[in-house]
Length: 239
Image 1: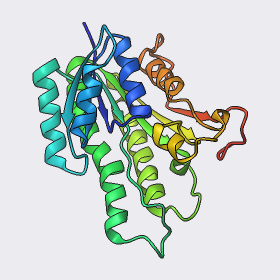
Image 2: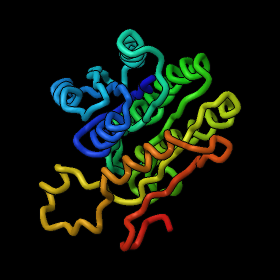
Image 3: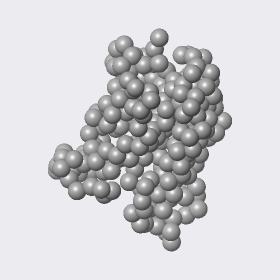
């Protein structure tokens, strides 16, 4: 039976790569994002044997998230996999960031992940387990200075991941937090900096394969909680 995956926060970068990779491995994949047109196009173009479903969802809106999960259940049944991928940030420090900007970062990155996880875990406990993956960043494990909204939200999301892993691991819910230590190669980044050396960027297709490996664990007695993905030959921020 196909596993049902929800990817919360999908754009033309890692989110799209994860959707394609999970579909290629036989998942039915629900795509959550505000941009209905983009996710509808992506859902129609996912590889076989998977199946896609676009669920336009504002991840700042608690009721919209809850409604989105009901839409997924109606279409595919209970959720087996959740990827908390959404984030928002104003790249500003303490003196410059507004309260609204700070709260937006927290609402999308932390509260959104909390609501999505609560919905998914409810399903996973009914079916005997599942996988939740959090997309983290260097700022989830140490401050870089001057990005206080992003840092606070990512620290919060990492804390959520730890707590959910501790509370529900014994019930078969595998939680993993992936620290992306570098910039992801995206069409927007390439447009801004077309001369950028590919070796200085993280390949979203390769990251997506790592995400799938976290889902497709052969030995459930030995599961990673935290994975750090770096730039390879480049100097990394974290290490």
